[in-house]
Image (tube, rainbow over all chains, first blue to last red; front, side):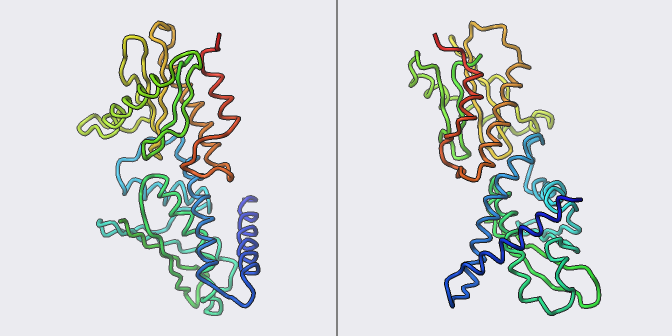
Length: 161
Length: 139
């Protein structure tokens, strides 16, 4: 379990660094989020290359999504996606009830607006992984934190073009 | 021992081609290019048994009078093509498979290199070293 913590700390520090080094007076949220997402994209590509080295070829998109939910998520976050839903027309919703990168933030409404910053890297990660497998996608994430319980909800909606 | 090794990107342009310097390189470029069609055919083969479709190693693509061409495709649709001399009959399937495995491992390392942009030609010395180890020694 030791290697979860360094990644979380590193991720948080990277976030802080990007926001601090943004131009003075310019809290350009869009650009910072884009930078984080692009970092995640590149990491996702490399990670996917390594993970799929030994697996068989994928039959279809659903196969790819299942791989992302199980092996890919386990590799990065040491757990699987809790819920995968699809409308069979190119939109997939992945739900993680206890998202690692957010689990250190308090569970109430206090930091809800800050949460998207923490999701940008992971969105890029997933987008990069998918693009390396030949799937063009748009990944968005939402957080709706339950007030009374510990779990954080994270939903990623993918729209395939 | 291979005579020519090529790595082709998802969009079908070469990321890396290396052939014996003593021979006519253009001939090998052409051979690799034509083998791409066979690779596409094998990847998209519908109606084949499920076992074939799940494998990364594609096997012998097509034999010419002088050479045999083998193919391998990764999950990220990057193709590896190895051309070997036909006269070299001692090369068994397993050896070709292990050559492809080594290539794939090396390629994965190149991809994970943060200084390498996916889609650029491969400049890595380590990769060159691995490939040199697999080619017929010059002279």
